[in-house]
Length: 113
Length: 114
Image (cartoon, rainbow over all chains, first blue to last red; front, side, top):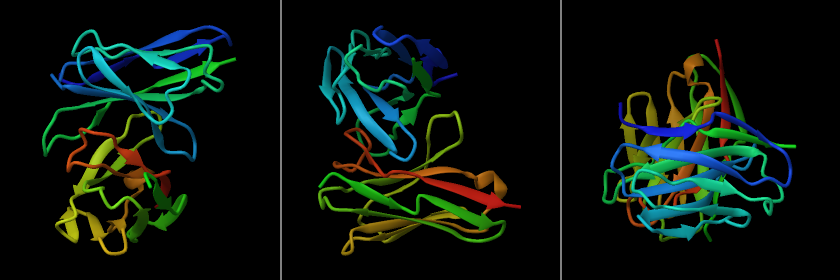
């Protein structure tokens, strides 16, 4: 089955710890994205990457870091500098050109206490 | 300039009724407008999308109406069903595709009562 895998589905961490969220896709998509979802605020773009070894900050990149060493993988690290990390995190991917849509993974719910 | 404003925040409709969700944007460079449907605990899934060269697009019970001069677009769900109960997001991007940055509206929680 082709698709986007995010793991784990639920993640719990103590305040002050860094945590890395996994995102893998086997759709052969060039571009990958990380969004944060909070109630009543829609989806906000954290980082995106349109090619391996390159990525750009989205609208709320502070306190987050990413890497894109392989086409199929785009892990997100939530650092201790992120002031309010508890949220639902969504990974997406797409290809270039008209007709290609952003496909989303199932999400990871991160709770930091 | 990059915002997409969505309303209402929540909507309750009886089975068989019409659900209408509205979005407005400021950036005239936006040229791709998708709608996503999200069920609780799941990632959003593309429902239907439109480009500004047409004023309406219909797929089954779902219709997008687009008003370029007013910079508004809306989703109409005809014959709403309980299975349509979900959160709906409008979005917009530049470049005619979703390859670049998608800017999302705040979401509308739709509840369809049987």
